[in-house]
Length: 243
Image (cartoon, rainbow, N blue to C red; front, side, top):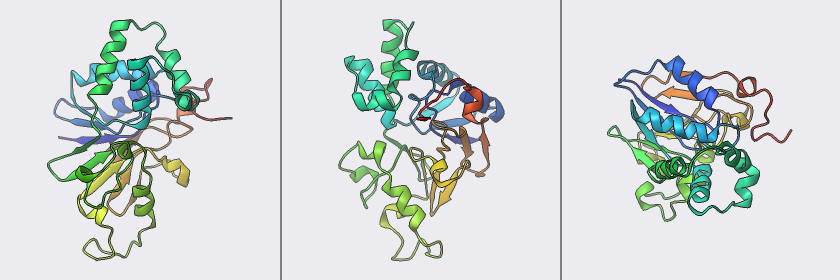
């Protein structure tokens, strides 16, 4: 059985389909999606519909990201958050043109069912962004931290590679879990188109919202697969790029 952690999709259905074709997923495999399914490229609603149908055929775990929180709120209340609108919400709203009320309700149910984090039997933690409690995710005061935090990744990056996990200098936050998988903070911010590893944290968001690729990381072997560059798949769109 293979288990893949899949990075932020941001409306890039073409990249998702291309990536899954490369994985050649089997019935016994599991896909863990790290959140941010919407906002950016033009097919957010189509990504959600595709994932709903995919989950009926294969084992999937859906983590909720900050963009998913915004979209869920819009589907529920019909109100447009101005910040969301400027950061991909406009494209997401437009992607829902032609979807029926019943289809939107089904998508709302999909968002409602997403997990803030997932801890597997091997003590591997999956969440969109991060957490701040030194006592672990169960003691986190605000659930929104799971969607927005960047300090976990920054801490992992800044940790001296020579510090052993058993050292008193090793951050207590990281000691709770054998491995931690995140998205949210694009590795392209650090000039990398590949998933990054620091301490016991793996970042699989390789910048598909902007100009990177969509990535699936095999969490057992640490081998990874990627789509083409997203701008090659959507040559007439900007995604979340400002240029």
